[in-house]
Image 1 (cartoon, chains in turn orange, yellow):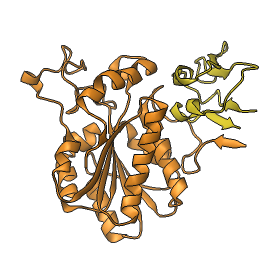
Image 2 (tube, one colour):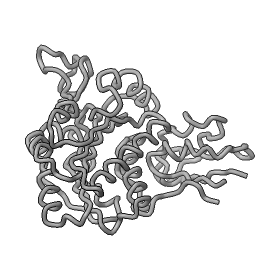
Image 3 (cartoon, rainbow over the protein chains, first blue to last red):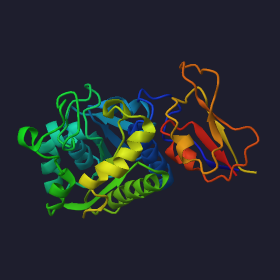
Image 4 (cartoon, rainbow over the protein chains, first blue to last red):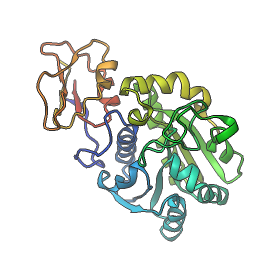
Length: 241
Length: 67
């Protein structure tokens, strides 16, 4: 008997992601949860700009694309016009926490009943590994070659903690992809975000700490260890709100 | 008896499955796949316990688990 196989909501194609990338893992978890909840015909995804820009080629359900950072503005429109649909955005740290900070904060403050999956890999992947707002102190990137310094570039932006202050936000959890156990917790958090939307609870966000072996300059295995040993200290896991 | 199957042409060789298999039953193949990298394979005759940790961590959905 088959106990683990390819989810139906995920197309059986090879992705363009690098070996060991967390995006393909997160895509699969979302597809699994959608299959499990039986909401494939009702779901509308909003893809970001960033490495996951062609997520709609990998998911086998309705998807829309948004201008850079504006996924939550598009999701707001979709959910208000079609409240019977399940709308979620899938955004990276450059999309949600840099160019799209404005849209993110205002959609959260309005308490839009949508689910947000925020993939935090502490770097801009698509454009060549530049420093992101979420880059850790002393982390080397192509635009902080000596390591990020607080004096020159400021501190890592903790968008989840910031959003938790807003009364419109109902659920925020930070999870990670660094081990099978944490991946199962991530799946549970993704499920919770969808269930909240189905029950009309309100704005839910799941921040996923995700590996980027290519621009961290590490192997896939070392990237998982780096999340566990370093990134989690700056971005503690657990339910924030 | 539990077993896994690996789609070797989708495998990108990140080797995360090898790092989590509690019995060390996944090894690197000697031959290249269509991508030009060495994928992983199930060690012939290995006694899999069907824990599915390899399938859970595989970013590219290459592994199916049977029990």
